[in-house]
Length: 169
Image (tube, rainbow, N blue to C red; front, side, top):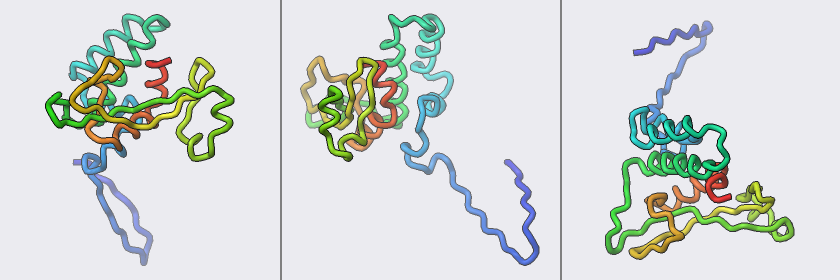
């Protein structure tokens, strides 16, 4: 147990409120890739795969997308808090969906649409939304990179845009 000592000025009262970190929504606890790794723990198989691969290929531009994929797997797993797709009839799975815009197309967007855009290494702007996958999935859907809710898919696409851009671009 941690002990905290706070001096209270004469005539003042103290009010203390403790918030357990685990009671916060997952989107408040996981804001960075490192938060996601911490949530899974050092011995999680995905964390071990990431550490081994990133150390072995550090600085190699040919595996940038692979490293990004491993990061996204960690992020998805942490945000889903144990939920995994079962690939059964009627199951709905969500994933971030990105639109690529040229600078000219981006310039024509309204401020609300521009809010969710980021610049990709290719010089194109990327916008994130969410979509879902029903029973059937095709090769362009990352079935292991899916979320249990649309809100989580949108959050991941916007909060972790750098990782997604490293993977896609």
